Image 1 (cartoon, rainbow, N blue to C red):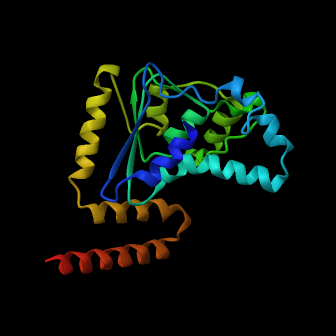
Image 2 (image 1 turned 135 degrees about the vertical axis):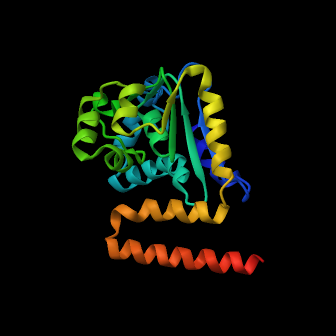
Length: 221
């Protein structure tokens, strides 16, 4: 499944603009299968530990690719979260642009309970959403975060009753698709890069993006 998550990005037709990530059943994702992680398969924790530092990091980079393509500027990605989203499942949701939560959703960054760190692209987004201090508390305690708390601290785009989750996600996807594709991609890129830019740099980025939009719009007429 992990390999297929990475393959999806290579199989997507170029005209796809919105990707919805949802879990089948009661939970969005329970995270790593611990019996596999502690076994003797190619990607188990004991096997990874025996690799050289460079090989281990390269293997983890492959795991990250299964999630991080969801941040691609040309896509708007929506996590439809019901039930538990634990560890890798939490990070999968964090790599999406929007997180629409059913009111039974529960997040947990549980890696610390295994003596590990979150390594699937979740730490930066988490810190941006809730601040470094709260992100640290969430990661070092591994505690469960309810949908209501997630909404309060900025992790959730919206929280809805379980029965309304599919409809809310469909409505958000439709609203996104109603916008001009080029404008939406430029807006996502502008906002994604904003934390690293000064005001002057962001102003320049806006000018350059708007110039591209004007040229594209006029050229299409």
